[in-house]
Length: 454
Ligand code: SF4
Image (cartoon, rainbow, N blue to C red; front, side, top):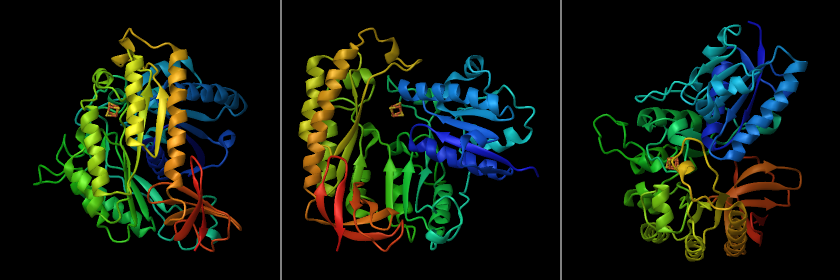
């Protein structure tokens, strides 16, 4: 079989990263190999994100660059996959005729098959979304040996942590969000499929797994995931996955507070390998804004959840997402977001200016906030968050932390605590990525810590 090479560029979230792995594996079974350089590839795939206008603009500018690349290498095929593909469909090919194939979010599992007959896919758009969609069982193609990372001939380091998608889509229709339109209705994978996948990963040397979904808290609510157990939920799944022998660290993302249960909060006090870290997007500190966002919780209930989480697990590191300048956000609404930040003292947050996403309800709201005001508010929020992050990080100085190593050089290394803090070490650690070592934290910055071996 003639061997072709592919190159995947992934935009956006961890779900997209996992989808890119699935596409790579699908292509591998059809004789494609992954290449290192985009300009030499026979097939370039852009796995796209449409959650914010900026992410979409990056895709368009990359497609502009690829037009010139394709002029030099006319045999190159270009595929746009993921959320922008789902949303824009044929419009992508109308705007960018050098694109050969558009593949939506539910169709990536069959990418290899679509490409098998390469002459026929020119101009094809495959973006069907099914209401009763079932995520195919797709066991990862892992090499069972991570003991000899340094001596491997592979250009890629062997992985020691992985993302694992447990569900897709969303039924919540937050008024600013495109996900229900780009990823379709919420569907959860079978518990048995997920646990089989965890076993494969752990047997291959994976030590840390992050369970992924648009709203993992509602896992199992829209379809049967465990025959005979109708109320099987996310907390049950966490316990089941955590019990797989050899799994050292378990994380998950992301969560909607409206579906956060007491059972799930209790997991932070009872599952030893569940990392003490929780990303719980609040989006705004004002109930009036939350209502217009269609988030279906109040700040009072959110704060109670934070209190319970800290009661179960005092060392838990909490992070959040915030949208600044949502349509109709008054000065008072924004002050309430600042007050929430003061009250919770998040370890970190991802904050963005609101931007219209086509097709969402909020894009039709008429009371948009002036860009200058949005920028000023965002700067105020981020400056204060930076100060708080620094203060919180300083609390770690003098403590001993176990870090899982990510990179190891001759005289430096980098790893991550179970609370998800990056730690730099300026020493030879005589260990390899994936190993867990103990360090004493001796310096704290806004975004990372420094430590020394003990
Ligand atoms: S919960 Fe809301 S913000 Fe999250 S994916 Fe669903 S609609 Fe989007």
